[in-house]
Length: 164
Image (cartoon, rainbow, N blue to C red; front, side, top):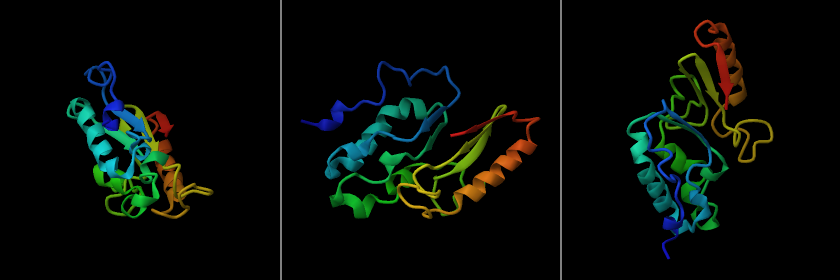
């Protein structure tokens, strides 16, 4: 049985429509850690293949959730710990927004879309009592404080602020 075929992130064409501006996916992308370690990369690939129709037309903004940490099986921890697959597959505006500074890291960032400022945080790392580690990618709390101060000063352009 090919267990990947049991999984479908897009049902009934919900995300294939072109009547939206962008997708804002808040973690738990594709659930590759729910599959055996030898299928981990295949599940990521399958997930992307199913979303190509959406991703090629609209921006697809993401943030990491607990399912992006690793493959969920000790056999593949060394190659997937620390959000490796997530960070290798996405390019969010971390550097442009002063977010997580490590190259290739998409753990926290901000962006403006129309009248909205989005501050995207990582609830899995870099905060007090974070489940995966308190200082993996930098000082998220200091960044968030600074980002929100800047956003507050720009309320004439972006009156709405969303922290996700």
